[in-house]
Amino acid sequence: MFDVLGLGELLVDFTKTSGEMTYQANPGGAVANVIATMSNMGCRTAFIGKVGRDDFGRFLAKSLEDFG
Image (cartoon, rainbow, N blue to C red; front, top):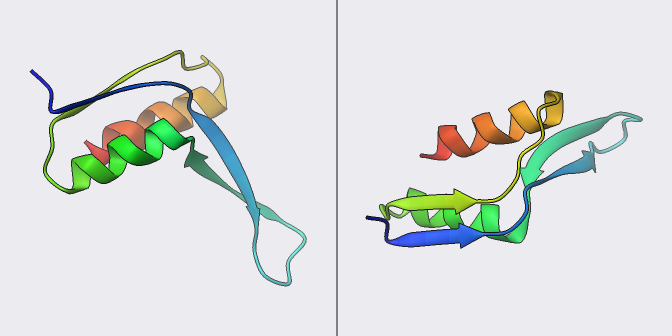
């Protein structure tokens, strides 16, 4: 049983580091952000959605797993 169940998308946000011409990949998406925050607050969370089988998909899946 879960306290919070999120249904939505995962996406990669690319943010520019100050003064640099490079971008950093960060996990994102409103649903992912909420369930990650709720997990950090001690809730049992789950995500329902599609995740790609490419490098970005693996990055996003690992990011969610790391948040619990």
